[in-house]
Amino acid sequence: MRLPLLLIPLIALASCTTESNRAAAPSAPTTPSTSAASAPSTPAAAAPGTPSTPALPTAVAATATAKPAPTKATVDLHGFAGPTDNADLFGYDENNSRLFFYSGGTITVPVQLSGDGDYDIVISAACDEAKGEKAKFTVSVDGQVVGGETTCTTTDAKDYVVKAPGLKAGEHKIAIEFLNDVYKENEYDLNLYVHSVTLQPAK
Image 1: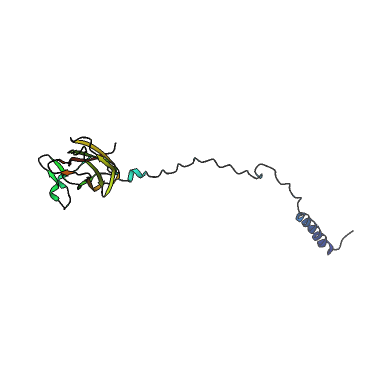
Image 2 (image 1 turned 180 degrees about the vertical axis):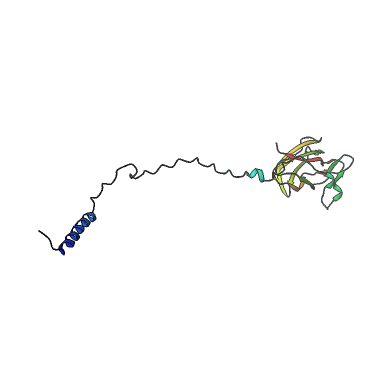
């Protein structure tokens, strides 16, 4: 049968439309790949680091200035100061190189210490004896009595040690007080003599 010429183009157009619709049909969804590349990766554990050593504090001893250590100090007895009353009864005997106390009272001498510390005050003392007694004396440092009362055990010169803890470097005043003067003209006379005063580091 012969088709009219008008229908031929319409049939061709319908055929093209059908093919076009087939091409536009959605394809079936693809199954996600399970390959290792798409699997979530486990984060790598961080390698432990070596702990840093804390900085050591600077030693105080390296920066601090060391204090001088205590050293021996010998008192110059010429620098003494005695009482103003009856001053002629106290003084320094050049011939015998000693301080003399012909009456009860105090003589003070200066001393310079090189360092802080505990000291022994060494008094070389002698005395005259009277009525069976020997001289008694005390020692003070800057007005404070140290060591208590000391009694001479012989009339000859002998060292007597008095403890003086906690002294500071610098100048100090050492005072020696004669305690038990007794005197009776032409019968007896108890006197005290000091040959030397030395301060040394305590033993």
